[in-house]
Image (cartoon, rainbow over all chains, first blue to last red; front, side):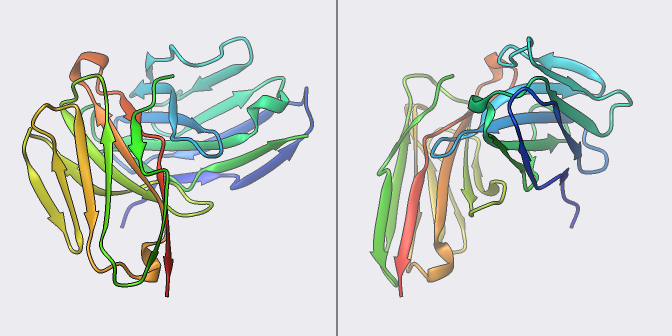
Length: 113
Length: 112
């Protein structure tokens, strides 16, 4: 069964360092999402791509976060510089189109020290 | 950001018992989804609901899309130890570009 792939699974970094997460969606899925999940809460959308274009990045802290999906397939989420409050699970999801079911990857657990 | 209200927050039950949890919102949703998340993993879709009043089953799981379109319910019958995890509801609105809004989660523990 096709799955969303994410790496790394775990990342520990010191504050002020740069970190990057990678996501490979299910083949053929045009829509890709990055979510942040703080411990004890549900996921919250950071950014949504339709192919290579950003559809919604209203909740992305653009002073330190950036996301790209250059060829409309895999995607990278970057944080620079990382802050203590960025410690969370970063989840990637994909769907055939925006209205279709979203399938989640296993996530990247980020710890900022 | 907005999160839907889920209750109960946590449940600790005996194996074999039935479980009920619900999700409420002040907003109307076009689609309701229920996901299960296990420690260190991403959410896995359990059931999707597309019409007000719809009742859908997936094995021992049954979910309903509330008539008002502002709530949804999930029932698990005859719980087993592998049901342990956090259950999240999620609502989807066409007006907000199909963005998913998640609930706060219900943590389920099952005692063998």
